[in-house]
Image (cartoon, rainbow, N blue to C red):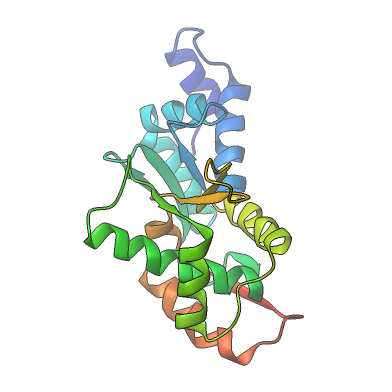
Length: 200
């Protein structure tokens, strides 16, 4: 059993028990923590420094802990098929963003692990791959903000007259891994807008 008190003592006062608890809670709630994010930085470094302890805690909750050294993030990935519920509209956008991210990776168009997507490109991809129109700008921003909760994107102001642009974050490859993609793709056509879809 992990003892936050013992780990706190080992840091010789650098961290208190509450710091360890907050880091665990933040990871579970946000799912992906990036070293580059101001509010996640302390928790990220604490988890990396005590990786084994956090991995043990998450394993008791049915989750595995991933540390991507290259892009400096940690991710809590459910080991079961079901973890969070995502609305169908969020699912559709997430599937398109994951595919766009993969395309950017293959063409080496990644900056610090992130793929920057403009709305025109997203609109074309959404229509081509899903056969439907992209949600209106206000709704789209709300969906993107919702996906930010899963550590999948950042929503950025745009300098070229667009209302905003989306940065797809590297954690999308872990949060929406192969099993999650298969599950989402299999269920998405069957559901209507009122239903929830579960994300592995």
